[in-house]
Image 1 (cartoon, rainbow, N blue to C red):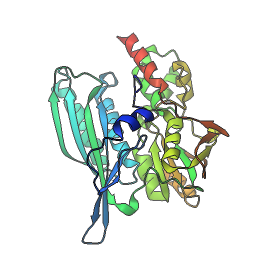
Image 2 (cartoon, rainbow, N blue to C red; image 1 turned 180 degrees about the vertical axis):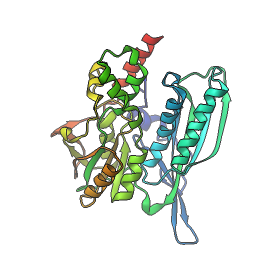
Image 3 (tube, rainbow, N blue to C red; image 1 turned 45 degrees about the vertical axis):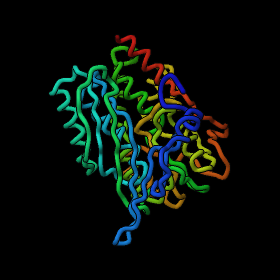
Image 4 (cartoon, rainbow, N blue to C red; image 1 turned 90 degrees about the vertical axis):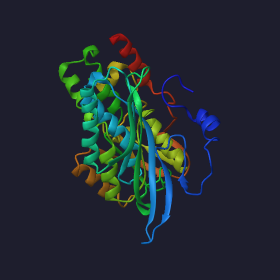
Length: 343
């Protein structure tokens, strides 16, 4: 297991995957390494509909230096995103706050009002939770949340659904989170021109794939979706291809690259293609519908491009060369380094 970040595939398969509790028939999709969500099959209702629940659990992080409204916006979008890539709109949310003693009532009110605003925006109801201050809890990790999406089985986009012949699409490009989050947080330590810093900070509110996923899945025949978090674009591509048992051939120059990202990654000394990029959505789409999906994303002001193809085989090839999963996201060490400087 890596010192920082998610467990790797070997750790998952040795320690976690063999120990998943009861083997229930209603679990249509259980835990897999690199897969965003699970699925429970609720069966056929009296009206003949087949209902499923997609659900995912994520840690809650709040970084006070961002300001509590901005920190809460990012936190709620992170917990909604893993279910949004199921193609089913998020519907319900359970939230656990284990808060540090120093958070004030007013600061928490800002956090919770932001959660409420964003939940209402996506028609999500909070159905249960837990909120408390505890000694020993500290920022940024302040709890966890589970998001559910209740919908029709026919609308579900499975993470292992990529098919040979599909087109590979990408929104926003690499390192959106690495650039937008770290430049915003460590602005006083970033030695770049003021205009470049301002441009990189504009990436902060690009750090959500929720709208991307909902727009894309409604616009055409989307076979798989995945957000490019830890391990970045390269890691997400490998996870998608592995889940579907297929090969991806993509072209690096075809990806969008948002303003400020390259300069920020160069300053921090990180590979943008291996660095976390919450907000970047990777998806596979039937070739007949790829144009419609791209048009819908464009209408929603989401930068997106056709970056390659799904083929028979295995692995991910970028400009003809095979790439492997980064395993360790380089932005974690840089984040720790700059946080230590601030302390």
